[in-house]
Image 1 (cartoon, rainbow, N blue to C red):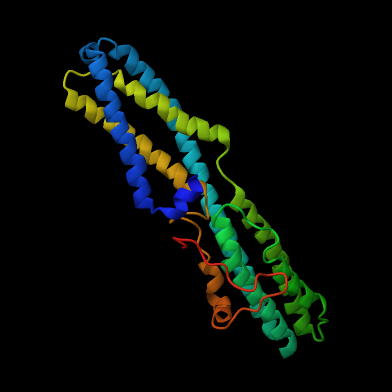
Image 2 (image 1 turned 90 degrees about the vertical axis):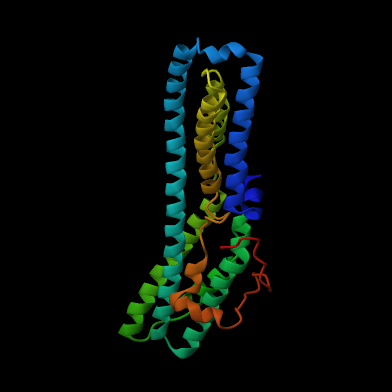
Length: 283
């Protein structure tokens, strides 16, 4: 559900729905509670309610802070993995300049097929939360095949050959890490604590009575708005490849990889023959 919302609505729209909805529901609930129990306006239970709110608020604040920091760290780690993978592919392309022209042409073709497969085929799948481990496997194997079938002739070629092989091994490792991160999401227990805690804390504010209704509604609305915005961050950061704040595939189009996008991609037999159209809001 969160993936569908992130991929079909802008962050601003989600903010209006989540934060605005939380405020409206909280204000409506406070009004109904005050009408149902007029004695709440006297504030006779404010001492007990205040202590309870403080205790629950502190615990819930720690939980939300932990969740948001964890998700933000996960997003930054995913960006680093993507940038590192793209950098390693670019370094292989640069190392290929030391090889004979036929080998360089084969290697460039395999690398071109790989970066096109990552951006055009794998990225939409990752945005949908269903990465395909077999996608781009053929083009990556093609790169391995080129290097495994070539025997360096000079000391210069041997140096660049070793560097290319090392970078290719790193690409395989970063690819696995990227696909794993595309499947990750907040554990169900933390989801229950994050969203269930809001269902406990916000109604508690209804019990804190104030004589002037406007002041009480302002108090309830502020608490609900803060919690709603925090939950919005949880939803937006939970999926690193979905939504407007998602990780971008641009590193695969830049630097030494840019020439691969000026011509039609070379696609291996194991890869789709045409690019899969990106979903709405593709970064």
